[in-house]
Amino acid sequence: MALRTLSAKNAAALDQELMSSGAFSIDQLMELAGLAVSQAVYKLQPLSKGKRVLVACGPGNNGGDGLVAARHLWHYGYKPTMYYPKQSKNELYQRLTAQLKSLSIPFTDDFPAALKETDHVVDSIFGFSFSGEVREPFPAVIAALGDTQIPVLAVDAPSSWNIEDGPPGDGPGKGYMPEALISLTAPKPLVKFFKGRHFLGGRFLSDSVAEKYGLDVPPYEGIDQIVEVPTQGEKL
Image 1 (cartoon, rainbow, N blue to C red):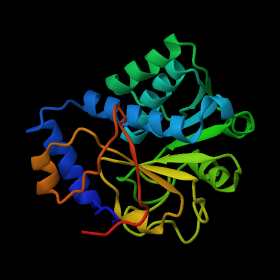
Image 2 (tube, one colour):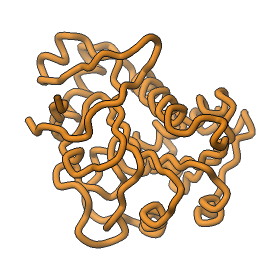
Image 3 (cartoon, rainbow, N blue to C red):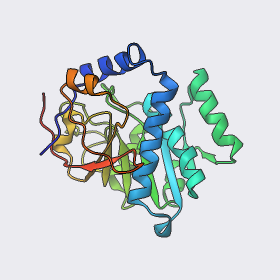
Image 4 (cartoon, one colour):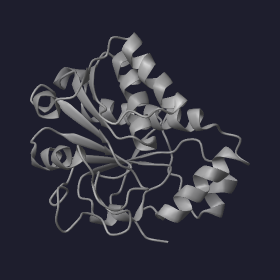
């Protein structure tokens, strides 16, 4: 059975609830999200298939999830490279960036060159809150993600996709269909347009919160923070 989806409005409300009555900090939620992303990469790209992972980060929370994922990937034995052109001045993101630099994880400004030297890509540029025009330097980056034959994992949403309406009809994201998507907390309505492998990372919801928002919580195995789920969602 397809999982029910969570609108952008309800996703934002759920995040606020998790940080208020749920007593989670933004640091905790980002750590859990990034850990889930790293496990999805491990499922899709075993070390034996290639250790090089290019992580493309945007300036917001989606980018923060990518920063966390890269740290975990390094500890698993991967060789991440960071593309993070719009680095946030927020103290949390600065700490996450410092953690990566302390591990000597390289940062690059040349996305096309880095794309030629990687085995897998994590798209953590824009998430469920994205709307409007894709601004520089990301149009060329998203166009490159759409054209590459290298497998891409999108975090919560393929960058440039509308949360409700899916892929854009024109512009840099037209035709962009990553190999895999990891939905965080719950799938978003755009999943009905997605055709690749679909993972869910949300092993922290209480039964009461899941019931309040009408969410399906599939069984997670063992210590896994992710579960592979059907692609098609049912919009609430």
